Image 1 (cartoon, rainbow, N blue to C red):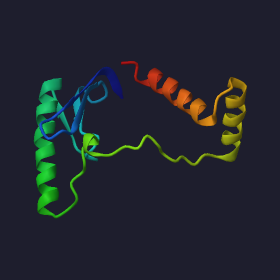
Image 2 (cartoon, rainbow, N blue to C red):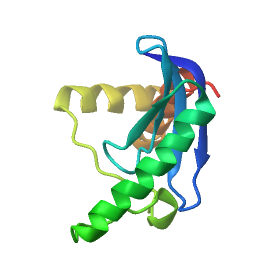
Image 3 (tube, rainbow, N blue to C red):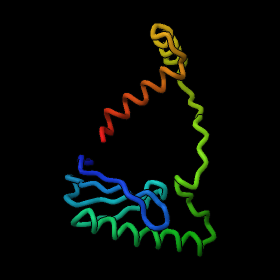
Image 4 (tube, rainbow, N blue to C red):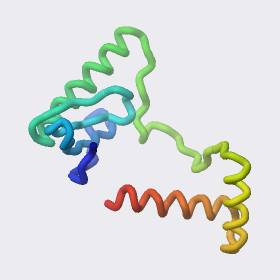
Length: 124
């Protein structure tokens, strides 16, 4: 389970690093979300981040030596601001109805719902 003490930084290669205290594991956990499975533990947040930097370097070296693709950093990805989402027809109908009641498009209403939910989950 993740605790609120979480922060996000970048390492020198531009990968996002997130660190949080895990009460369940009784230690700090650092993850690199752009590199699936790349994480590290430490007795402090800074120690976990230091271990994560080593894990990132090792992970990238192994991928390069194995001729596997290197994950792009989020900053290196071109985002168009658009994504497709398949939803059940009943949910689509409800969203359309609620958007009409609010006098906005379904896209605007869905963006409002996503933004509101995200703000509640990630208040900082």
